[in-house]
Amino acid sequence: MEQEDPEKIPNWKSDFPIQSKKASHVNRREFAKFLGLLSGALALSNGGIVIKAIAFPSKPLEGEHFVCHENDVPVGKMFQFSIEGNKVVPYMLIHLENTEWRAFEQKCTHLSCAVRYIDDTKRIECPCHHGYFDADTGEVLQGPPPRPLPQLEVVNKEGKIYVKEMKS
Image 1 (cartoon, rainbow, N blue to C red):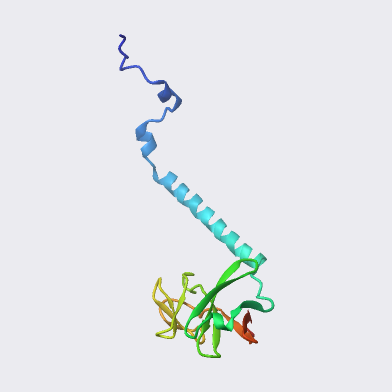
Image 2: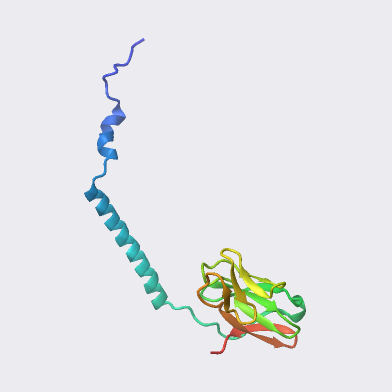
């Protein structure tokens, strides 16, 4: 049986003639060039997001949208629903008192975590960072959220609950 010559270089090494010392060493100039290109790519992608937001602004909600029947949501409970437009937006409908209803977007204004209504405290809670909103107005009560929850106007027509864009 023939023994292989240890001095012989394998064929695959001739196809990839990279020395490990040169492959693992990165000098300052190469690192700075990499950081510059990465920063430029991130700036361009952020610019694309801004251009998209300016060129294609979100449209306000048009008309009234049926959500549920009045009897479907007991007092002190919430009902989750979504409205499709140019994007699907999750909302929650809260039955506060016998005739009082509120509808808010179900995304926290801090980092878009899903919020929920807590009947015991009469507040809307964001469980991610312990932000709290007033269930009557959507205003921030505590925590990191920077602004109130977007609210919809609730219309009750003969036991059917509809929502529409809030009047300014």
